[in-house]
Length: 127
Image (cartoon, rainbow, N blue to C red; front, side, top):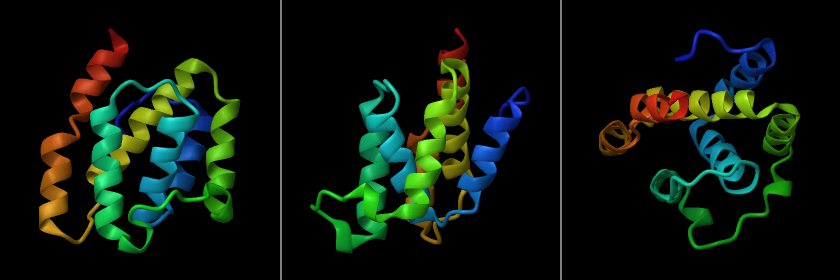
């Protein structure tokens, strides 16, 4: 984890998130960023969607019914109980987790490394 002062609830959420595979992580993160949190970083959401489409071409161009992914739905529903501060911490930790994941594709790993600037996001969030 990148933040040292997370609540126990945030740590538990990120532990559950960490146990997902990379495609599931992307789905949960996109879902939360688009539907559960006022997140104005469309470049980050677009990057995550692009990578998801590359990793899971069966979903390309489709509107995914998130409800059919029960495990992901349960994890995402845990997000709504957080206060605003913890919600921001979860967003930062999810993005950090994704940035540290090995997608087993050097091009995707490099694109994430180059484009997902977590330290800048943390700095922006605390100021």
